Image (cartoon, rainbow, N blue to C red; front, side):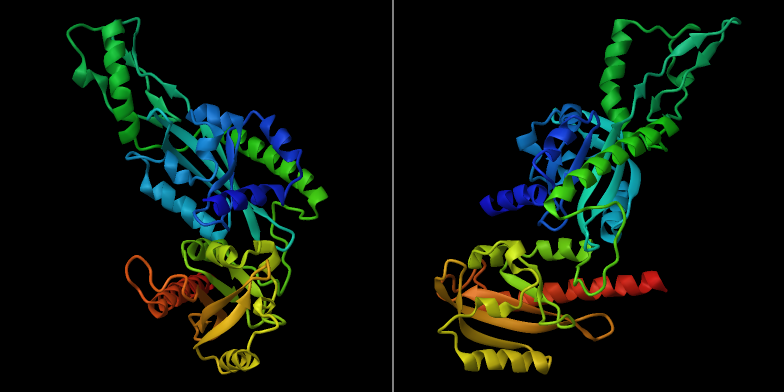
Length: 397
C-alpha cells in the first residue's frame, strides 16, 4: 500500500507543477484524473466538485478505482463502453447511473478523455461528471377538466409509464405530503430501473467546456516539469510505448517481472512491475529505458550472463540463478526466468524476465513452487500480448 501511495503521488507531481492542484481546485466542475499505468487504474486527483457531488472525502477516493461508485443499477453496457475507450485510448461519453457515499443513486453524463505525454503515450485520463437533473412527474388540469400528463425526466429520459393506470378516484392528481413520501421512496427504485437516453445538449456542452478548461490547466502546468502533456497523440517512432490496455493487464500481475523490447537499441525495459521496484529499490523512472544489466555487479557471474544472451539470441526460454544488486548496493540471489513473448503472428514482440529472490519465499500461500509462479506470470503476459495484437490486427482490417 505504501508503494502504491507513493506511485499515486508521483504520478501527479512528476507531470504537473506544484501549482496545478491549486488551479484545478478552483475549477467548479466535477472531475477526476486517473493513471492507467498504476495497477487498478486508480484516481490520482478528485476535484472539490466531484467530492461534493458524491459525498466522499478526498482521502476516501484517491487511490481507488472508479468502480467504487458503481452499484446494482449501473448499466454494464455503459461500463464496457468506457473500458473499451480506455483500451483504445480515445474519448468516450455515456450516461451512467452511479451511487453516492450514502447509497443514493444518481444519473450523470460521464465524459472521458485521454491525456497524452510528449512521447505519444497516454499518461492520464480525465473524466468529467455532469449530474443530470431529476424532474418530478405530476399532473396538471386543463381547461376542459381533463388531466394533462407531465413527463418524469431523468437526464432527458422519459419514463414511459402512464399515470392513468394508477390514479385514484377523481380527475385531479393530488400532490399532498403522503404522495410525496411515497414518490420519494419509489424514486430510488425508479432511478435504478430507468433505462437512460441521451443527456441534453446543454449537459453535453457543459461537459465539453469543463474538459477544455481542465486540459488547458494540465497542459499549462506540465510545461515547467519538462513533461509536456497534450490532448492529441504526438507520434514518435521507436519509443517502445505500451498501450493502455496492455499496461492495465500487466498491472494486475503481482509478481516481480520486467518486459523488454528486443527491437529497440540495447533491448531496454519498457515495463516494470511494482513488485520488481520493491525488490530492487529503484523507482520506475530509474528503470524504464535501461537494459537489465544494471542489476549486475562486481560479483555477478559472467558465464551466467552469457547463458542469458544466448537464450535471447536463440529466442528460447531459460532459467538461471544470478547474483544481482539493489539500488542500495545490497546483493541478492535472483532465480531468474526469461522467456520470449510472441504476438498473434508468431513473431517475438518482447522478452519477459521474472525474478524471485532465493530463500525469501520458496512458495506462495497456495504452495506453488518458484518455477510454477514464474510460468504463471509468463503465461498471463503472453495471453495479454497475443490478445492485444489480435485485436489490433482485426481493427485495422
